[in-house]
Structure formats: C-alpha cells, structure tokens
Image (tube, rainbow, N blue to C red):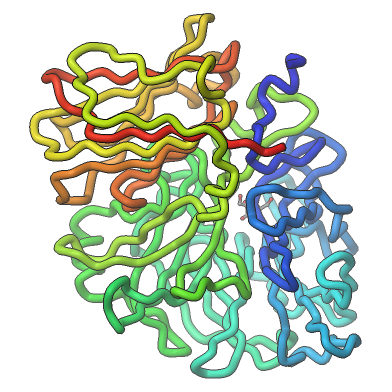
Length: 496
Ligand code: FRU
C-alpha cells in the first residue's frame, strides 16, 4: 500500500478524490440504488457544497458518477433528498414509461459576516433516472429570512393521504410540510423543542413508517441528527417513536416516558455514523427500510490522516422496529446483500476463554475485510474484550463490560490518533438494553472501520481508526471469569 491508500476502505464507499460528508438524495429505481453526497471536489476539507453521485445494484459495490448538482446564484447545495415521482405529480416528467426523479435540497448562501447565511429549499428534476438534473425555474420552493439553521429536507410519499410530506431541520426543532406537487409547500406543524437531545443543532431528519415485528401494528419513526451532543461526543443520530396523522408527529406515550427517564435512543452509539437517512422507493417486502450514514464526526472529520480523499459511508443497513419488555427499539443490521461477498468461512463452537485467546490471524483470513458473527449463551458474570492487533503494537479493543453493562469500543491505542484531541479522548460506551441472557453480535471490519451490531442490531457502534499497519490478529479475553464463546463464524469478504 502507498501511505495514502493504506487507509482507503476495501468495501465502504469513498469518493476517488476530495472531501465528502452527508449522504443525500438516496433513491432506488430500475435496478439501481442511488447515493448522492455532500461533496467539495476542489479540496479535502469542507467548502462550497455540490452533490456527488454514485450508483450500485446492491448498496455494497459502488460506481462513482459525475457530479449531479453544482452551486448556483441561490447558494451552495446542502443536504436533501430525492423521490421517484411515479405519478408525475410535479409535471416534470417528459419520458413515457419513466418517472421523473425530483431532488429537494437546501441552498445555503453566505451573507455578510462569517457566521451568517440564508438557507432556503429548492428542487431539481431528472428525466434520465438521476444522471443529470435541471433546476426548477421558480426556486426556492420554501423561502426563509428568519431562521438561521433551516435545512436538510427529507421528502416521502404519504400513502394514506396521497401527498408528499417533508421534514426539515430548523435549529432546535423539526418542521413538517406537505405538498401535492413538490413545488408548493404548506407548513403543518413542529416537533422537538425541549424534547430529546439538544446538545447541538438539529440536522438531517427523516420520517417513515415501520411495522412492529411480529404484530399487525405500525409506528412512525423520526430520525434527528444532532451535532454536537452525541452520546459519546460530537455528531450522532437520535430517534423518536410515535404516530403521524398527516399533520402532527406525536410521541408514543410509553416511548415518551422512557425518554424522559433516560435518553438512549440513538441509531448508533459509536462516534462515526452521522446524517444517515433512508432510501426512497426501496421499502423491503417485509416493510423494513434501508439506510446508510456518513462514517465520521464533525469533531475531527476534516483532520483524519488521509490526503487525496476524506470520509467513507457506513455499510448499508436494514432498519426494523421491535417491541419487547423494554418498549420500542429500532433494530439495525447490515443489508443481507453483504452476505453475497462471503468467501472463506471459519467456524468454531464452545471455545473456553480463560486468557487472551487467539481466534484468527491474517494468514487464514484478511482482517481488513471480514464479517464475524458470535454468540455467548448464558451471559452471567462475564465481560469480554475482543482485540485487533498488528506488529506495530497498535490495538483496537471492543466488547462488553459486565460491571456497568456497557458495550464499548476503545481506539486509544489504535494507531494514528493525535491529529485531533477528541478522536481518542475516551472509550466509547453504549448501555446494553436487551434483557436476553444470551448475547449475539455481528462485527463488520474494514481496513479503517469497525461496525458492531449487538443483540440482533438493538445496539450499534461504528468507529473508524488509522492503524500504522493493517490489523492482523483477532483475539478475545475475559474480563474477570472464564467463559465459553458458544459460537463464532468468521467470513472473509471478497470484492473482486
Ligand atoms: C450535516 C450538515 C447538514 C448540512 C450539510 C452541509 O452534517 O451540517 O446539516 O446540510 O452538513 O454540508
């Protein structure tokens, strides 16, 4: 590897060159998943934003496309969404047998003074399935002179009421709008002041309906990204469970009372999953939604040790909703398409772990592209630590601490950490919410990222790292008492 490519992920999306942040405008149409993203083609730090573009048939292997949206006289192009306008409600459709794609985004225009901008909402349409866009002649479709942070429109089709619904972040709240044609928008309601996390500005909302697993019931989910104020510092995405009647989002009563006791509703407790929203027009047959997030954190994103490009996206995830003794919880797991890339399998049962026990090394499986599934039955007194290590003495530790019932990721010795103080100033933790006495997990490892899905995706932690050489050994050790690793399965993921 060259110094630079040492850090480029094997299978997470990165732009070939330059700076990237939030995923934008994600939709599915005619066999392709589209991913647009906040992009600054001139530099490896944030600047005047464009929408970059990539396509995929499976949300895993991406092909980068030409830039889709450039700044204009209304401002630069901030985050937003795209919809497949199947009914041609917008009238933008020009091609028979093909629906227009309509992008809804924020124009951000710098005004006099450093910290002063005008943010408005605009639209653009595509009649070639998202390759090229034409901006609407009457932009903006939502003007604004009053609100400082007013951005990231996420639009979806409300099937029950036959209309478009937009959620928009406005500083410390979410504003709800509706429209018949994507051009004229009516303000419906607001949600959020004094509710949930408010350690920073609210950004990148999403609103969608999910079936509650194993029931006939459905609930509405509201995602709200917040920066800073995440559970382990910096950027993170919280969620609310409730109902939407076409006008107002109301939290579920039980959800509301548990939220007021302790706010632990985060789609990811790691420090590197931000601004994630779901794909339009891509609901699975079982009702689950698909999403991915930006795998970084505003605390240090612009300083991570890559040069030619900066930032990757998380692995795409399926989103489901369950209800148990604990109330409502989202479940997030890697999309099943990832399993098509498994190539080597290592499987073992009933490993007695009483000391640091080697599980595998890079002679058997490349630990820079691995999927690991494990089970520990009857978790009693045990806590455990997995470690990834290399010959340079770097290590990345993660596991479960039995004393405080916390999952954790510790990257304090994971390699290059001193590019920003807040990158490795703590061990990230996540309270275990599941009451199951068996613990299971799925771990996705790339060259520079770790994504852990504990308890069938009830608690997720995503973190990036920059080792001085690839990690080549995986081991596990007990916290205090020996225990049995009931099952472990390790797959190398092959992308050629
Ligand atoms: C979130 C965010 C959005 C904004 C975009 C600008 O990371 O701040 O609110 O639209 O990034 O790049």
